[in-house]
Image (cartoon, rainbow, N blue to C red; front, side, top):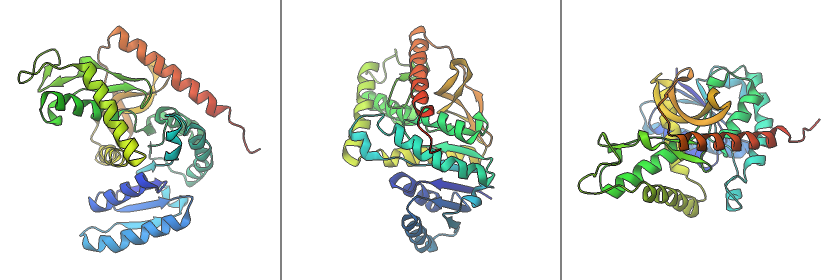
Amino acid sequence: MRKIGIIGLGNVGALLANLLVAQQAADELVLIDSDADLALGLQNDLLDGMQSLSVQPNIKIQDYAALKDADAIVLAIGKAELLKEQRFAELTFVGETMRQIAPQIKQSGFDGILLNLANPNEVTTAYLQYLTALPKNKVIGMGTVLDTARLQRAIADQVQVASSAVAGWVYGQHDGEAVPIWSTFTVNGQPLEKPVLGHKIDPHESEIQAKLNGWYAIKGQGQDVSGMALWAMRILRAILTDERVSLPVALYQPQYQSYLSFAAQVGRQGVGNYTLLPLRPLEEDQLKVAAQNIQDQLNVLLELPTDE
């Protein structure tokens, strides 16, 4: 039985619940939010709509105990309006919210995969692992999958090919020290140095356009709702089917002794084998900077005053 929990039913969490129902990707959903009316409203809305579907999942709300046998829990918490201040403005809010949620996850006996969508993603994923004490391979974040998708699309648009023709990864820190691993990028299997359909690829121009595309989403909607929800679906599919596909998720990277976005196989056990490819010296240095930034942010969360 495919069982998914979603904690946080704002724009992203609600859209993810709708996608899971519409795509008939779950047999049971557990929906939890600090606003009980919101959870009840979403439950009833989904129940009314899914009568049109052949597969109708069981939907429970506000029940942490029901998370015990879930395959995965998705944390979709945050306060998007804080992003108008600066890109890491949600740090303290998310950290304090996680401190309220984590003990209830632990008490439920949950031992599946925790997928964190909150921002700043890498550091709050590290903090979530610390609070829940789940094995590091079972606590992962969205990481730079969205940054990777944006850069792939920008390259594809530049040379007028389909996005599916572009491969390559962005590592490091989502919305921070994001590091394109240029040696991994290809178009139709060819390195970026080679012209495509008569077009010469300018990596710098593509990187700027990718960041601009992300800014358009934030400026217009307040947050990148669809991108987050759809990529969360992709990661959940990898977990539920034990796909073991390589994705640049936020994970604990022993080489940097930190959580970091890095490509690894994702499946039913969470993080599997790391995808280890040669990195250029500059990329190594940039990843060290990202890891240090994440560790500095984690120290801020670890020093938050307790209620005791």
